[in-house]
Image 1 (cartoon, rainbow, N blue to C red):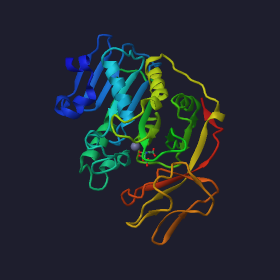
Image 2: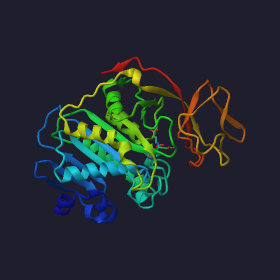
Image 3: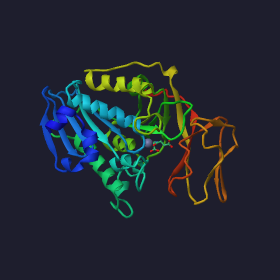
Image 4: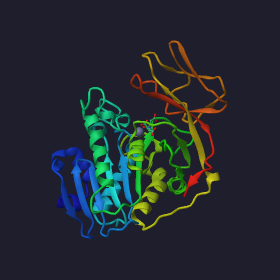
Length: 346
Ligand SMILES: O=C(O)CCC(=O)N[C@@H](CCC(=O)O)C(=O)O
Ligand SMILES: [Zn+2]
């Protein structure tokens, strides 16, 4: 534990010596903040004081092991909190998602973890691999954090930080999970804009992603946040992430960080088509280096598999997250079209 406070190297220890964290541990920092570690890569901070104005903030990264920039950001924040350089105003849970996938610099080892939430980990053959077990452990960590006994019910926030496989015309963007009958939040859009994330995709269906889990099951303001493009550890141009890191620091260290946004600054899209790969032979009809948010005229064939062509349904319909190599049955492509958000919550 002293090793952690001195060097603050929680992620490195979690990856190299996970057995150190096989039993839960709790300790206190010099500034009174309680630290609770429940597993490798899972660490909570609770600063002193207990009021409803204290938010509960979940910052997750590395749900895909090769999406390194968010991992480096969270690693740095944890180190600065452990060493006392950052003083928190809110409770914060950091989750480093897929540690074994980080070690092999891959998106996942056996299964895409971001399709295993909302209980999907236990469906079919059940908890048969490490990614399924980890998805359940991450869900349990979020549930425990949001519903801790003897703690006031502060605002629940979850930013699941990712980077995209391809370049994106709109470099930073967020997926706003389907809210059912809840309204979209203007203050959340303002916070994302402060992170440099000014493109928002409105999902229109339940999914088995981590952000949808927190949003739907825990009533959190939750987002999948894409901060840039995938790069190996150490190769990120961290200046491109400065705005996001600074806004995250302000969020967790200020009593009430409330940036404002002019809605005209934002590009809002709604998901028009979710195209799943149904067959072995699945082809995308554009180049591998075509960036996210490239739009096509109505009628353009975007993807196909034997017997089915998937076409743009409206002029300008744009592609996001195309990946022909996903497992059969999984999402191979989203298409999005511009929309407006008029009916907002504060
Ligand atoms: O660039 C890609 O193709 C994938 C980047 C990524 O991991 N995106 C998330 C989005 C999750 C969501 O829709 O909320 C994912 O595919 O899991
Ligand atoms: Zn990802």
